[in-house]
Amino acid sequence: MTILIEGSATPADARTYRLLPFELPDGVTRLMVRYQFGKELEQGAGIIDIGIFDERGADFLTDGFRGWSGSARREFFISAEDATPGYVPGILMPGTWQICLGLYEIAPEGCAYRVEIDFEVGEAAPAPELALLPLSATPQPDRRSADGWYRGELHCHTYHSDGDSDTLEVIARAEALGLDFLAITDHNVLTQQRAMRGATTPLMLIPGMEVTTYRGHWNVWGDKGWLDFRVGREADMRASMDEAVRRGYLVSCNHPKTYGPAWEYPSVDVYHCVEIWNGPWELLNNEALAFWERHLRAGKRYTAVGGSDNHFLKQQHIARLGHPTTCIYCEGDPSPARLLDALRAGAAIITDAPDGPHIALTCGEAIVGQTVTAQAGQPLEFNVRVRGGEGCHIQLINDDGMMADALVDTPDWTKCWPMPAHRAHYVRAQLVEGQSRMRALTNPIYIQRA
Image 1 (cartoon, one colour):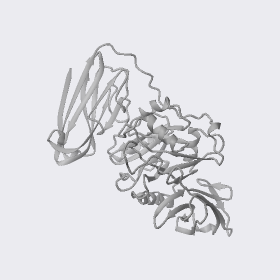
Image 2: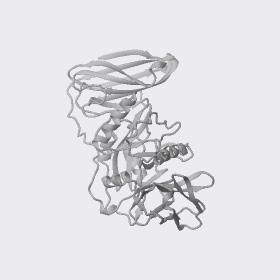
Image 3: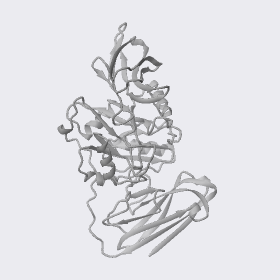
Image 4: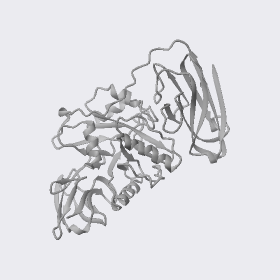
């Protein structure tokens, strides 16, 4: 049994979503979908993504989502016991299902598409266990570090979206790099978390997803379920992100820079973190840093995070796992949940590699992410320790700009800088090699007046 759906899109349809309903009969045990578009049909050009919703519905923020592969695949299947990575296996209930096309880019001459849907009817196999990776709060004393700092990757992908490796291969690479924690954030799907749940690894695994819209990307970390990415209007973006925050997710605005893609809804600002370092620093991350600093100067307290955005382990690529690495400070016995709590509080720095330089910035007992109280007429003293940064310049930055600069000339370097209390509302540190190559940077210590 085959259903054929054909159509076309115009440039006016770009960056919108189109639902193609079809009826799934009773007794279907396997659903197979193939599609082509544009030059593959010799009818126009463009990029069209694909996914599917089941009989529960396809309205915005409803529960019928069964999978998404963007434009990374031209076919997928779903059965009771198995499915293409990125799609959810399970019983195929009869009713109105809907193919969802994401009309990402459409050429001036338009872009045609053709979708073929095949069914197999028979006796269904038992549905598998679909439990996803939980956000564990169980203390892990065997993972406790001597100094309380933990290094990890917060943003990477597998073949559950558009990467080239399976989940266990990414976990193995993270282990080999000596990381302490790992979040795999495939685009718009959670199916990678089934494999993560079954992994045997010393890594602290953090569930996550990259909500990938046509007007900005954002990460969520936690175990609170799927979120809708089909936003067009600003109200939709706010509704989806508000729902993530309401559920308790830790939310990050990802790579807000040219080709990031940029963040197109500046008034939607309910996230907790900003990914200011995505892949190699030279890929316009200075724009994301400036985006974050504008918010800091406006009084926001977003945590700066980094992530490699790695997709490819089996070929040479500029975005390598763990480059950059986010380092989180967590007192006591760590756990994935405690690491996210510390990240939410701003107790984090970013360094350029798993073995990259480390900056410790303190003011009295306060560390990054915390607040110190300035007394009138009494300067604050900021202490900086840099390990592994010899030959680089350490710089202190406040809301007026650079307040101090010094050459790091030893492998373990320290300095104390006094600062008049009236001069700033925050202070952060960064380590720069040469004229502009960022090696590491910290979140701020915030300043309040007595």
